Length: 56
Image 1 (tube, rainbow, N blue to C red):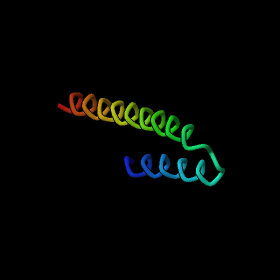
Image 2 (cartoon, rainbow, N blue to C red; image 1 turned 90 degrees about the horizontal axis):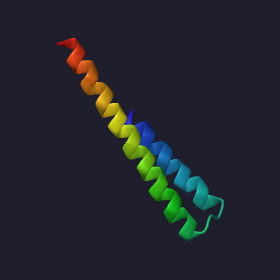
Image 3 (cartoon, one colour; image 1 turned 30 degrees about the vertical axis):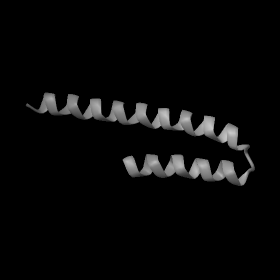
């Protein structure tokens, strides 16, 4: 699942570059996408821990 999220973010960056988005804007967008990926990864980890606790 992490690979899919990473590839989606990478693909979004490639599409934006192909559409000619300015480098300054692209840097801001990449930081925002990185933040979204971090939040997604943290929530995924939290769900995994909660599932492990209920299994015990």
